[in-house]
Length: 161
Length: 123
Figure 1 (cartoon, each protein chain N blue to C red):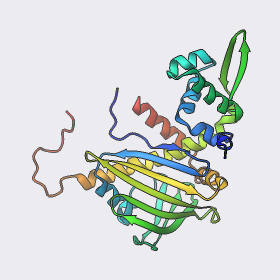
Figure 2: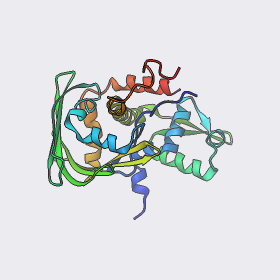
Figure 3: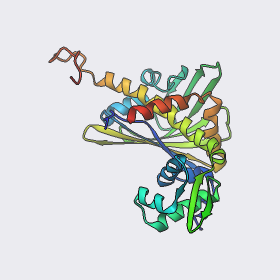
Figure 4: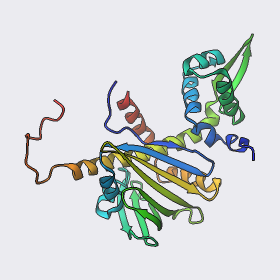
């Protein structure tokens, strides 16, 4: 069986108002944290190869704001912003998030990093106020032109085989 | 409060790993409960419970064949949500692969003494 370095992301819906994203990284938590919270580094991965990141503002302090925006390949601009609520360096980052396409549907994201033997298990729990908001959040992925992502997903699945 | 309300939601029905496994198996064709129990290695009550949840949200359909109950995927009911979750997962997978590259670079021995030529990884 092929060993992959880290594998693909796993998305589950643990409760009706939540989304949980899990992934393991072959790097210590300190570096994952750095890549997650440093604008120059975030600019290099957050776009998920689906466009160009146009805004990446991070004011990393409790009460500080963040805003990310990108222009998808179809020309659509999508923006997200929020505020940092809790910061435990290398371990935990709680922030609010609003997808600007649905400004009423806010969420609270909790990033958790657990380092084991130099590797890091990353979890992002997205907690919505309402189930409908959660469902809209997932639906918004389609709006951003992610339909062709299925093909990439298959490639990932094949590579895992 | 009973937990039943959450399982009548197709999102949650599909989210549970075992239920996704059942759906994957049924994607390959109709299966009897007995076959599912054998392949999954779960006890009958657990399998029945998962199947009931999947049936309630319309994700699977069942028919009687003599004494057997045969389950099959109800693709049309399931496809939109399946696509949503898969797309979202794919987006995060791509995002994380890009993040891997960033992490690799952060870990690369910049300025460290070169102990090998750095060109033959995993030979």
